Each structure stands twice: as structure tokens, then as C-alpha cells.
Amino acid sequence: MNFRRVFFVTFLAVQILVPLVQAFGPKPTRFAWQMFSGTSVPLRVQIRTVTEVRDIDVSGMVGNWRGDLNLEKYLPPFLCKRFPEASSVLLFYIESDQPQEFPCQR
Image 1 (cartoon, helix red, strand yellow):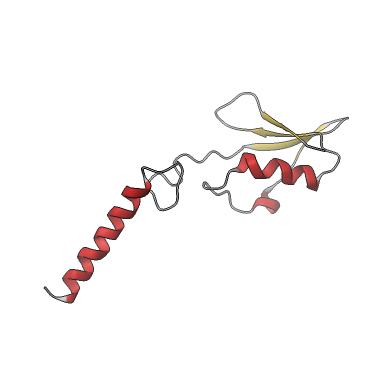
Image 2: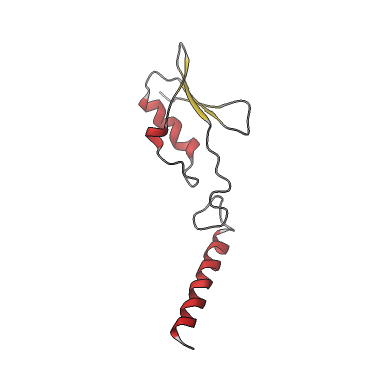
């Protein structure tokens, strides 16, 4: 068997086996076929203060939304620290009419 054939078969096997193995792990996972299929990004982000509810532009803070990052775990605490006047963070998703509210821990 020549080198090219061995390289091609090995390369093809890696391209199939790695995503196949990762597909059975927790979702979404890196290097799997469903990597970005389950990603849910909030349409709008707001903070609630004692006197008002206001929209927050997080594009400069977040950069690119990543499917493998637990946004609900890390974004609300970050925004609570960034905006000390906030009493809670509201995330609006396309699949829900009501926002998910995350109270700020003080």
C-alpha cells in the first residue's frame, strides 16, 4: 500500500470517527456534527434596576456568541458586576414570549 492511500484512509477515518464519538457526549460538544445546531442566542438583553428596565448592547462585551459556552451561567454575573445598579438581568430568546430573569447576587 502506498503512502497516499494510507494517508487518505487515515484522514477520512479521523474525519468520521471523531465527530461520531463526540456525538454521543453532552450537547452541544466540540468537533461533533451538532456543534452549533443547538445554540440558543438571546435576541435582547436587558438589566432591571430599582427605577427602570433598559436594553444593554452586549456585542462589544461578548464578541462572537459561542455554542459551547454556557451563556446563562456566565453572562448574568458578568453584567451584574459591570452594572452595579442592576438588580437582575433579563435574557429574551426567540422560542419564548417571556424573558428569563437572573437576579443579581449581592
